[in-house]
Structures are given as structure tokens and as C-alpha cells.
Image (cartoon, rainbow, N blue to C red; front, side, top):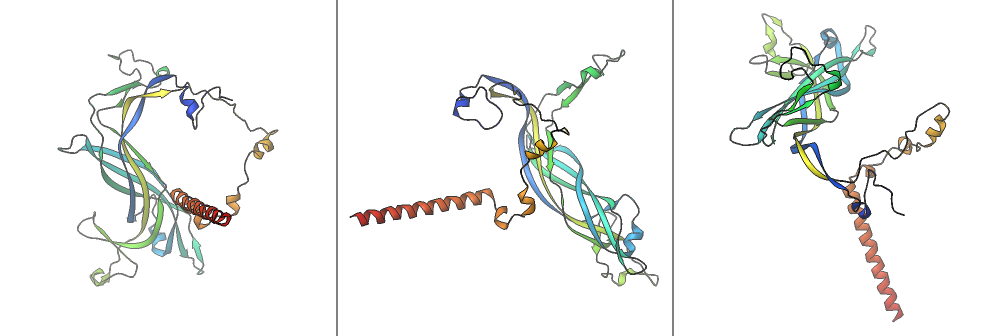
Length: 314
């Protein structure tokens, strides 16, 4: 029985015959992209509040969670390389840090999580092509009212969507906190150059006028960061189309009277009760290769068995 219409999902040879028209669409085409695996080592955490008193008596620290909350990016032309750009990306990573210290009775206690931030900069080299046009589009025209004093349509809801530069897209996974320590910061040759030392790594050069001078304590973290950086442009592409994408089923609403019916449609979460084993984490390609080798081995065994049967019949 043939299908009445083509729906979103996998298609077969029969669906190809249902192509109706070539459609011109405007999309963001990726001209170049790269993946990055960065290890941000010994980055100082800048806290939102004064935690120096806690730092002075803390024994260790633990990062409760981390997330990228902001990404800033800008472009620079590459001289003598048409269409290429240096992309400067700046990540803002938010951390919630807990401090462990001993109270007056000698008991080990943990403080409330303190919010801090880590900034990380990186520069990549990508191809973004060239563009000599500016794209303007209307934004919420029903909410915009032209100013009576506006000239040439100013303030009428038309904004710049893209200029001659490509658009920077950054996809970033949640950061992995690999290490967190309390160290003393020693400044060398200006505030922008720091070196970090363990608590007991202080030398004799800390003696000032007969008194020992201890640099301030600070929290430093090592973070692993995975990201994909893209350069895109708005272009018009001609693509084949079957039809308008019309929903084929009605929405299911959760009500008190059908709550159990909705729950019955959820599969039992076996993976939550039985943690996956090491071979469950292997790559799909490795599983396919192993399956292919197994099928090949079984085929050889079957061929050998057939040969033995023929020899016996003779």
C-alpha cells in the first residue's frame, strides 16, 4: 500500500517520484568550520564576592558545576589572503565553588557554593568568503510604528541582518573541570604575568624588612573545553521539495484523567538500573567492523561445512 504523502523522516525510492518543485530558500551556509579541544590550565577564578577570608583558612576546594554563560567573537581580515579571517573568541565560564575548612571544633565543614568566573581567549583561522552586499530585514513590523519625524523610513522596523562580514557561530559543550587547587599568586613583570605556587612553595625572597610576605591565595582551575567554530553567510539555495510540512498527528495533552495512559507510553528505563558496560561505550564504527568480521567468519564456516558435506556425498 503506497503512502498518501511524504512526511519528515527517512525516504525511499517511491518517495523520490513525489518531488513536486524546486524551491528557492534563504539559509545560512557554512563556508568553513573547525573543532577545538582546549585544556585551560591554571586559570584564576574571579569571584563575585570577597572570599579571601575563606581562602585563608580553606584546606581544599571543589567545583560543584561549570557552564559557559557567554561567548564573544569578532573578526579581522587576513592580509594578502582573500576571503580568510582570524576569528577571536572569548569564553566566559561560570563556576560554583565549594570551600572545605575546619571549624573551631576541628570538624571538616563545607561552605555554601560561591560563584566565580573564568575568561578564556582563543584565535582561529577560517575561510569566510567575500560579500559586497548588506542584507536588511523587517523585525516585528506589527509592533513598530514609524516616527512622524523619521526620514527615509527610519525607525520603521527594518534592521541590518548581515553586513559584508560573515557570521560567527560557536557551538560549545559544557566544560569539564579537571582540577581545582588553592595556590598563591606571585606577580612578575607587571600584573598581566603571574606564576602560581603551592602553599608550601615559598622561598626566601618573600622576606621583606625582616618580615615574611605571603602573596594572596587564589583558586585556580584546569578546564577542558570542546567547541565548534563556524563562519556562515546568508545565501539562496535551490533545493527539491515534496510539499509543505503539514503535521500528521494531533498533540497529546497531559490531563489528570489520562496521566496514567500517558505514563504507559514511556519505556521502562533499564539503563538507569543497569549501568552500561565498557563495550557499550565503543564507537559505532568499531561495532560495525566487529559485526562485519563476525559475519565474514560465519560465512567462511558455512562454506567449509558445505565443502565437507559435498566430500562426504562423494
